[in-house]
Length: 325
Ligand code: CP
Ligand code: NVA
Image (cartoon, rainbow, N blue to C red):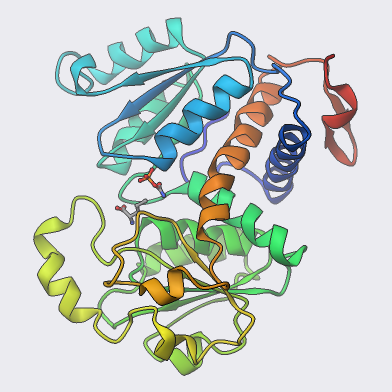
């Protein structure tokens, strides 16, 4: 059974397939076609934290593919009413996939442990792999191949940054993290990436001249992630000087594009001027959450042999030739 908890669960060619399937489904949608490849498939959505993009993009995506989503909030009693073992094994009797947004990464690992239903991480304190899928799709749309391109993440080594560092290694892209010392990415995570992808090019720096030089994409996220609210004053003080504003952007090439996973705290980690500039692609990026995740759901269904009439060839997965009429 296939799960997506970090991106370490898939290979580089599987990642390329997911993005390709997502891109094909996106093009079909743009031409007015919504093939029901996931007809009557059910996505359970288990959320412990708030969400706009992740929740709505998964829900809209599976509906467009002919399936349905069930939003499960606190009242289903996950982690309070019964054991996780009983909870997930029962959920697997009703649903085909689970998307889970959890406070602790160990919670999604625990759900996947039973291997009874595919578990997709919809954000934990450790990783945000679905965001990284959409980010890769968005950057590919701008420059084509991502090989030898550079992404600079301005902020702390948080869940979004961790997934991006891994995603960049998987597509042979340089990754730079720019932020104050004391907020860098844990070395253990970087070591895991380098162990799997020895060519990974990851550099952390507090100097914008180093981290923004020659970059193709500049990415930022909130300084205080969900669950860290008690640290927000201290973080605001630590990150002064790392706001993505016109001054910081002077260190990046003029054509560099700006990304943000959203939601943004405008005026804090990014200014209105930059997020609303022609360089910014944050709205397209948010839109791609849905397209990339549709690619993931269809790809997982192909892996599980739930979806048959698709053209699987040695060059990848070609959906567009097999659209049901
Ligand atoms: N980027 C992202 O995951 O947004 P939400 O928190 O709104 O889902
Ligand atoms: N790092 C942020 C991302 C939100 C999509 C958080 O975890 O709150």
